[in-house]
Image (tube, rainbow, N blue to C red; front, side, top):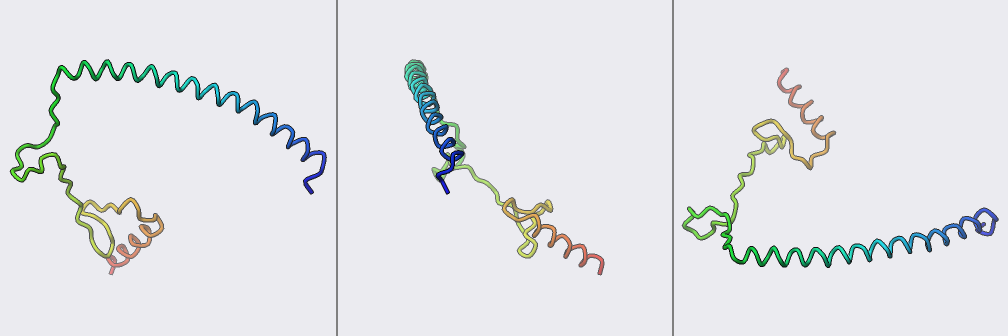
Length: 112
C-alpha cells in the first residue's frame, strides 16, 4: 500500500523538508549559543557589582524557632461532604460535573 506514486512523492518531499528544516534548526541553535555566551558575560558583570552590596534575604525574623524563612500558608477549612470551603468555592482539581451534582444536592436539601 505504501508503493503508490502519491506516497512516494510525499516521502520525497518529507526528506527534502527534513534537510531544509535541519539547516534552519542548526542555525537557530548556533544563534542561541552565541546569545547564551553574551548573556554569561552580562551576568558575570552584574554578579561582580552585586558583590559590593550585601543582600540580606527577606524573611520574618520575629520567629524565635529559627524558621524565619519559611512562609506559613493557611489551608482553607473544607466541608468533608461537599468539599466546599468557607467562601463556597470548590477545589481546583474537582471536576465541574461533580461540582454541579453537589450543588444540585445542596439545593434539593434546602428546599426540604
